[in-house]
Length: 253
Image 1: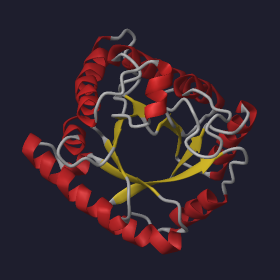
Image 2: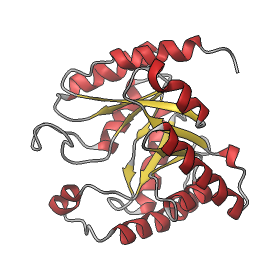
Image 3: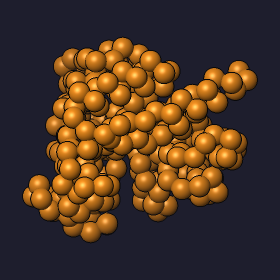
């Protein structure tokens, strides 16, 4: 079980408390996101940056994995991002997941001086970044504490899923169970093309409904990481607790 604590419309103290509450509740992964402005509610409301927050979470937590869902490949030089991820990996004692995607929110680009480009150019940036990040990890001293898992978020069947097959350990998809199942099969085909075992890539999806309405279908679609998105200022973890209870009631694998 994962939770995405969206860093919007809240003071940081409340976000930090929500991280502690989620860890105590039994969640496995705590994500934030890599945006510079709120995506919902007041467009100019309170908001905090992704990676400095992950560094703080690495110190503030003990058990959960942490990461961005997802970091934008175009906002940071890939070698710098690799070094940032390696550093948070060490601070956390080996609990970082590097979530990464091509980016899509134009306001982030425009107001912070990045070239928004086209969907194709943003995907090309992602394709360029992934091998550079992995190569930089091999050169850093000290190296990461573990092989840092890479999560690629997105559903583009020709390019994003191809890059996922080539580089990722986790694929995060969007949509209902039927959509996830279809795109998962496409990912399997890309794995076959590049000589990768499809079972080596875990399947992840966001869920915003009660487990008794969608869990069985998502499980059948191959999803093993379920993530609840929660925004400020309250960070109501009620739905997350329902999903954790569902997880804990599953028979042993």
